[in-house]
Length: 340
Length: 266
Image (cartoon, rainbow over all chains, first blue to last red; front, side):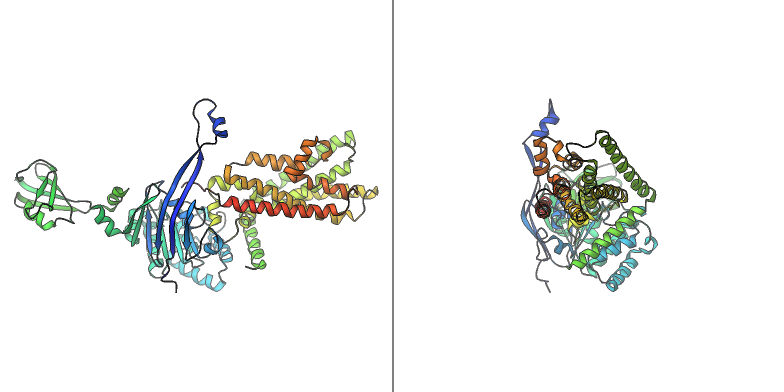
């Protein structure tokens, strides 16, 4: 019913942290204690975005870029220095509890469950907290339990779970009260391939079948590539990109690497200097580069947005007898590396 | 949100907190026994000293015992119901407060129900000393049975005052993070000091313990009326009013402090 309203709305968000300046030299400790000098660290600078209901958005950035700080402001943990957050139209800093009722939050680094109690007990307590009716709780617990295979460690204390099990238990717990929005802060950190896959599958389902709005931060670019329709990149506290993954690739325009192996010798065209653009003869824009030329092998970099692979092959086949061709698409991690 | 919901939730949280503790039974039992032993040893020390010197500045052994017992019981009340308010520092330095903040529950309620510590040792010791001192004073005709309800009332208001002081001290942690030493000053040292009649202390310390850290109102001030009939019964009600004022101020301060929470890096 609130389809037209954005689920998460952030405008002009700032967060500054104040830390005392540490003095150097004599009596440094005592002077630091009495100093009135502070260094202001701007963790988040003027961030604005909005996320629609049902979106699956990736929030990425290098360590210390301000990802967690943003998430903590969105969930009402930290108060912003200025700017405003609205979750489903409500400000989490003025009405923290009201917003918390409709949120699911998972921190990969830290469990939200009761450390010393069996998994089951945590769910009982959460059901009380969020006022989930018993039949509703049973139903959802069954659903999640099946999807995430929780039965095998249902009665095990949380502290004895493996990281993969704990993560599954944590995510299922965050869904118990059927929240509208799910915030996931590095949910796949430290997990093995199988565990990552099962969590990704589950998150995908939550988004597509249950219609949950999800904001995900991660350092695993496979997470982003497989799950998110949209990414936001934060760096030095500012949003440096916001849009689809394809657009991001295009924008960065990383070249495709083509490795051509020849039978016997080959002859390069006139300008044999490496890295000089080779013109295809169509127009000045359409060029590719020879980055490495060995005795039998030539490495070529070409931006596929500008040049068609077929045109390159046609040209290359004129240089000698082609034995093998290998093409590597730019890795998403490399794309991201460029943005950072 | 009805009162019933909060009470139910508090009960659920307390129960799970105790169950968590019970996972480590040996530690739980040993901790309880040790705490009780320390308490009793402490009072034995004082009674030996007092027995040797008789009264201090006009305060009999019974009266000092009374002050001691009221303080112990008020503190037991405060620490039982608000255990982890005193341990906020741990939540601040580890960023554990984050988890509590993502729940639709007041932070204070969450803190109050975490790591509950039952204090049967303190309760028993405080109760025993209170019985002994009041029995002594009733036998000698210094006070009547009427002192008992007043005393119970004063223990509750005392618990509220101690809670307010503890909460305000913890709140300072939102600015300075490490508060252990501050707590030693405003809680432990102050509470120990007012187990003795305030007349023992120089005027500046007396006003410190009454105005800056109003811990003197827990046992000493009410005992002036309850044990010695000075002022009048309005004194006890005045203290109750003071306790409510302290509570409101510290709750306001706490709310403000929460907006200054900095969390930790991850």
